[in-house]
Amino acid sequence: MQVPMSKYLKNQKTILKKLVDILSKEFKYVSILGTDVKGKEYTVCKTGTSITDSPWNERGFVARVYNGYNYSEYSFNQLSVDTLNLLVEKIREKANDDVISLKATGIKISNYPVLEEEKIIMSHLREVEILPEEVSPEYRIRKITDIMNEAFTYSDLLIDFSINYEECHISKIYISQNKDLEQSYIWSKGNLTAIVRRDNDTKYYYDGIDGLKGVELLDDLQNMVKDVVINAEKLLDAGRIVPGEYDIICSPEIAGLIAHEAFGHGVEMDMFVKNRAKAIEYIDKYVASDLVRMHDGAAAAENVSSYLFDDEGSLGTDTLIIDKGVLKTGISDLLSALRLGIKPTGNGKRESFERKAYARMTNTFFEAGNHKLEDMIGSIKEGYLLDVTLSGMEDPKNWGIQCMVLIAKEIKDGKLTGNIMSPVIMTGYVPDLLKSISMVSDKVELSALGACGKGYKEWVKVSDGGPYIKARARLG
Image 1 (cartoon, rainbow, N blue to C red):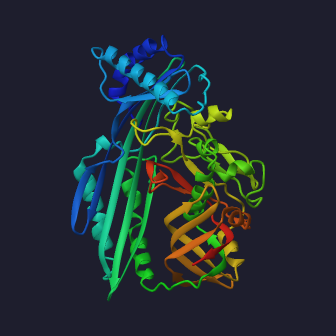
Image 2 (spheres, rainbow, N blue to C red):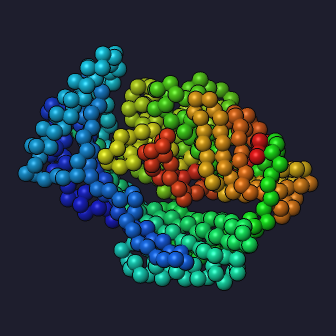
């Protein structure tokens, strides 16, 4: 079924266009982003049930104008014909205050050019099988409660099993002198977490599923329950890895973590402008094995960060970041692209309409190769298959990377032994890790269970992934 556009935003378009017309008499560039995001989060565990608003919920607008030097923004969530003149005055005051503040610093002001937009009128409404409003909250709670109850039939060691299901309906419009854009889509995700205990030893395992889906995602969750419980039990017998350098195979989830941390954050081009990224020194140079091709973009894949346009009105693209081992380009927001003199890649994203737009990842992944997983395992004399992300961190200035992984499955003489190590830390220098990639499997998988911050804040939804990759890395 087609995902409907927000009635609220549609009803505000006429007055927004009038606002743009009024401001355009004074400012050389004017644009307005309107957002209406609504969703719910459902959680069931042994000790209780909860239904809460999605943390992504928002409704409001942000206006951007050219102030003669750079760009000023003013966010608001009240809009009516009666208060339009007052709103114009507030936007004017914000632009004037920004210029006064710039001049007061005594620092040389970096002038931005005026944005020139091509004329585009587009609308994109995605499809899902079951719209959120078609089923009751009771249906969802009953469904995930049944999943929890089923989990307890698989193990006497299970002390708790939680299911977190979230759905989000995103509607956005972008209005400027030359653009009239609108989009509406739904993403949903479900997390399953099993906690097991034997004597005084407690372990947990999680898995989940996500995508541009509606309530139909709940059916997919049910198929994962048994494996989550069994894998949690296996962790009770997990050992500790002997620190050292090993041949490794990274699951699509861990490959995505590497892509995200290594040349996701590392090529956000607002960091190029601020001289905080080493990647700018390596454009058109080898940074990885010639088996590596890496993409990012709203149009590069179908997942939670696949949109028609970003939060600055730039159309989504498919950016080839690494091509056969060579670093080709980065991902940019609109203003960074202006400073660098390049075409924006459609990666300008905001945590909300009240926050600044930054260069952010969308769907970040390694391209598939032509190897089979069984052949990759068979090629390793002693090593590990890494799976399940805990966390990741990368230094874009010095290219160090650290990945926390829940599971390392032992490989000896070309076979999985059944032994598991947990948890495991993978560390290294990004180019060394990527240049060591020697095999790449033939199927890509993406995941989007979490969210991505810039530094310690500015959270946005992203997906990442890839095929299985064979490499060499330090584990501890």
